Amino acid sequence: MTNILPVGRLRRSPYYNATLREGAEGFVPYNRMLIPRGYGDREAEYWRLINGVSMWDVAGQRQVQIKGPDAARLVQVLAVRDLSEQAIGQGKYVAICNHRGVLINDPIAMKVSEDTYWLSISDSDIWTWAACVAGERGFDVEIDEPDVSPLAVQGPKAEDVVSSLLGDWVRDLRYFWFKDIVLDDIPLTVMRAGWSKQGGFELFLKDGSKGDRLWNLVKEAGQPFDIGPGYPNPSERTESGLLNWDVDTDVETNPFEVRMERFVDLDVPDDVIGVRALRQLKANGIKRHQLGIILHTDFAPEDQSIRHVVEHNGKPVGHMTHKAWSYRLKKMIGYALVSQELGPGDAVAILNGPHRTEAHLTELPFPIDRS
Image 1 (tube, helix red, strand yellow):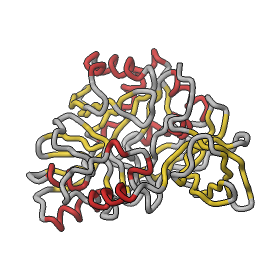
Image 2: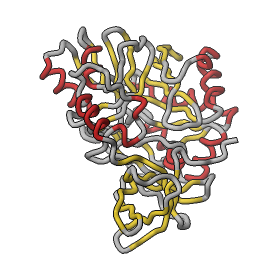
Image 3: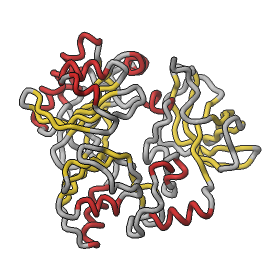
């Protein structure tokens, strides 16, 4: 593989060299950092996640650190979810919207201390957004990107691996809660989380010079459980109904349209950005919603961030946003952002230029036997 030189706009992760040794077959930029896109056997990586345990370089999931006397005020202004009762050591999934109520990121807001928060973001420029809002409103905060790089351990055996490495206390860690520890002189924040529905943890490395050491320690701890490398798997995340912001959303998408209603509190103060627009959108009635889609076709390559027209009875009713092969359903599946008039079971067609594919809509997550 050709080595990629680090530049200001495209950075290597602390695990970059380790992933090369593991056989990473390619990389994509995420928050201007390179992350692997597989290790040569997509199906094996999928089943490893479903049945065993997988380790992922997700250092591209960068943190926006907000620190200072007004940190809590700023984070609440940014997030349309009531954070007034959030405890230190607790993360919450939040919607960040613009003034029109459009979803512009869906991070985990982590309360590190009384005056420090991390926003663990999707691929976007929320650092700039937060800094601009803080400056315009005169908040006393400092905003930067700390040296923090997550390594994910995911799958039904992930808890066994992490507990063997860190201790049985991790078994009592609740979802999105986190704790600071030091492992062999490596500073970590450990959170039960991860972009899959198979269970697992994210180890937030707080010293990028120790990425190789952390990777090797996790790999060694995972050997009795047949751990192997992987990446945020598009097949599993699609089956599980997980949102991928900017892939499954467009420039007009609000949180209600993509199943985030339970993470939106319309009674937060009026100065929370987007809440007044969201109240009006809700009052007027939400026009679109996100459903699963099953294509009546054989295997095809996965396709992320597409905008193929969805047609029903000869009329356009929305878009399919991505597709992936489901190894458990043995079908091509994806998400559709379509009119509220349609529901699970409705027959549709996908238009891709001159190509037409029959399909039908279904609920999310997909109806898969998980026994």
